[in-house]
Structures are given as C-alpha cells and as structure tokens.
Image 1 (cartoon, rainbow, N blue to C red):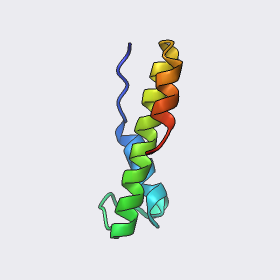
Image 2: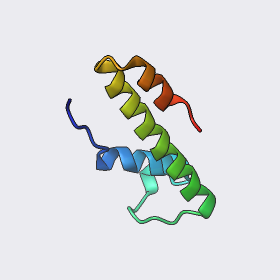
Image 3: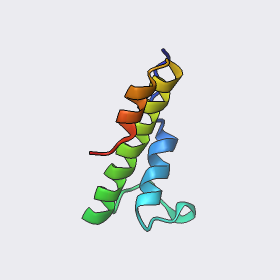
Image 4: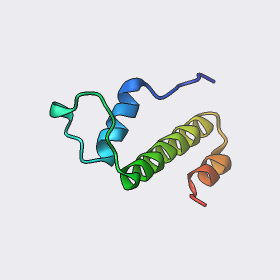
Length: 72
C-alpha cells in the first residue's frame, strides 16, 4: 500500500479555504482567528479520513472504509 501524505500545496489550500485569506494577496504568514483554525482542523480531519477510506477501499476493506467515513 502506497503512503500518500498531504503536500504543502494541500495544506495551503485547506488554510485558504478555512479563512478569509485571498490566495492572490497572501504573503505566506498565518493570521487566522480561532474559528478559522477550528475550521482548518476540521478540513484536515475530513481530508485525512477520506484518504484513509479510499486506501481501505482500494485494498478491499469496504466495511472498514465505510466506518472511517462515518464521523463520530
């Protein structure tokens, strides 16, 4: 099973999605509110859960993939 990690680009895209940052004017620093940080962590959690579920599905572990996708 191949290990596939989030890239810098993935993390940047999630941070931009979670906040009011405009990519075209972003200087690279992080100036996020607590609400935006919470939203960012939720996006990372969702991305990670979906990646794990996809890998499980590809290996034939369909029930495990379904359980991973169910948020507690």
